[in-house]
Image 1 (cartoon, rainbow, N blue to C red):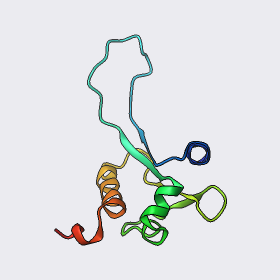
Image 2: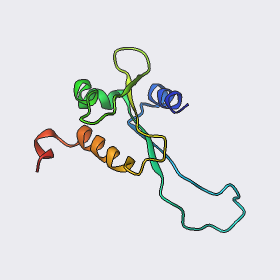
Image 3: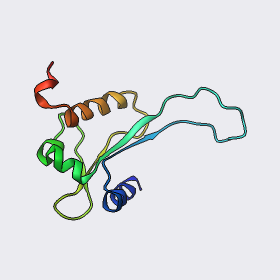
Length: 111
């Protein structure tokens, strides 16, 4: 379902990035709000134009165990990284490593 939405957004609206998160919450919305646990990242999608700008070879091979799924048709697909099921406490650190790989220039990563 996330993949279908990301594909439609990339095709129709030129998606740049999409971070999908999940969080535990109460079913009853009539009770007063209270402090809830933070959300967990579940997936990250890189739009086709953004993936092209970063470089497909670089974006397609992150230094972690996430291999992206190609979304859409043609030679310029969006890249979708499915991370976890929403219960992994290391999900944010995995997401941070992915973002560092994608958006921080290689020459500054070691500094």
